[in-house]
Amino acid sequence: MALIVQKYGGTSVANLDRIANVAKNVIRVKEEGNQVAVVLSAMSGETDRLIQLAQKAAPDPDLREYDALISTGEQVTVSLLAIMLNGMGYKAKSFLGFQVPVLTDRAYSKARIQTVKKNLVLRELKKGTIVIMAGFQGVDNENNITTLGRGGSDTSAVALAAALKADVCDIYTDVDGVYTTDPNIYDKARRLDHITYDEMLEMARAGAKVLAPRSVELAKNYNVPVYVKSSFSSEGGTLVTKETKNMEKEIVSGVTYDRDQAKVTVIHVPDRPGIAAQIFAPLAKNNIMVDMIIQNVSIHGFTDLTFTVSKKEVNEVKRLITRAAKDVGADKVEVDDNVAKVSVIGVGMISHSGVAAKIFEALFKENINIMMISTSEIKVSCIVEAKYTQLAVTAIHEAFGLDRGR
Ligand code: ADP
Ligand code: ASP
Ligand code: MG
Image 1 (spheres, rainbow, N blue to C red):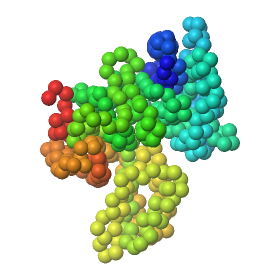
Image 2: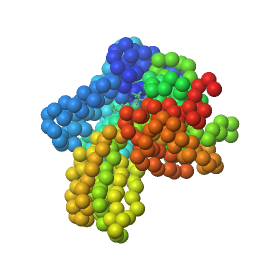
Image 3: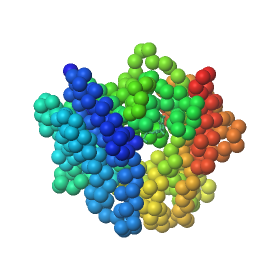
Image 4: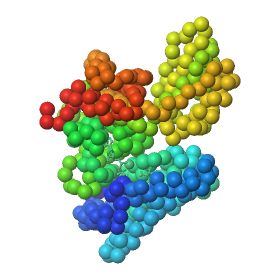
């Protein structure tokens, strides 16, 4: 008997028919003699709808209430699945984040899980109950409801699997695995049978939304095998795991894009020690993640500082940075949110040269201008104009020989 955590995303629970399909799959795995804990997202589009409602109610909604609202989509799906399973004669119980409890910090709308208390869930599983936990939500130490950030049910599922020491965490979604690039924007993308935690982590951080980055971090830290599968077909699947001997050693494993990017430039910044610290401190204080940073060569003691942040936070960033820029005596702040980040990921890069050059050449051939570049041991990212996203991805995918049927 194995303990299996299954997670179903928004499209997999989009309506009653789809939930019935989930029920069938849960029952199949349960009937095979396993203990099953299920984590669900809200119906697809529901979290977006709730976010829009909050923004209509007030332009800058109070974050405590915002989380209380946007976490409700998951309450609908978990209780519906439990009702359905009970109606089919199976013992099933739904649990919201606070009932488990899934304890988090208080960073509303991007809370981090501190612990998942396993006792209640384990007790139910031992009784033969199918446990159905709401993804995306938790509770802080003063009983405030928190949410984990978009795509956060993946994180809920892996955190639950880690707490329960589950044998596997199956992530059911609308594609049948992890591909070399988003199969929905390029039909020549290839499905990968295996991918290492490190590569998946870089792909997720660089925008491949098939898994939330934090879920991969947790999977790696707690050694949880994650299997990405289709809700709609039993074919395919990608295992995310530690490196194994027989894994293909490609230089590049994937190309990703992230449209959730905004470029911020602080112009004519005095070039002296402590200035960068002063500019970035307010962002850190407000839990705002800064991605790429470049500083131009200084001319006559002044320089320009450019960095990228999530588009969702750009208004707050502009407000904070405009104040900081004034304090340090910079000229002005410019924001461009018409950009996207295209990244190339592969552990093989560590031992191969020429990867960056090949990317630049592929983009040059398509006449795509590169606005910013950043590199790590296993990733090269470029900021390009948003309208070139798909063209850049396909050109790079092809240049590295990743296309299917080669
Ligand atoms: P869910 O609602 O099940 O969590 P998501 O929409 O969050 O599903 O993630 C699945 C989507 O991720 C796919 O529909 C696909 O468009 C996208 N995606 C992006 N990059 C990749 C990739 N490299 N491999 C597979 N899917 C990807
Ligand atoms: N429902 C949440 C969202 O849309 C969480 C998730 O789907 O993982 O972001
Ligand atoms: Mg998702």
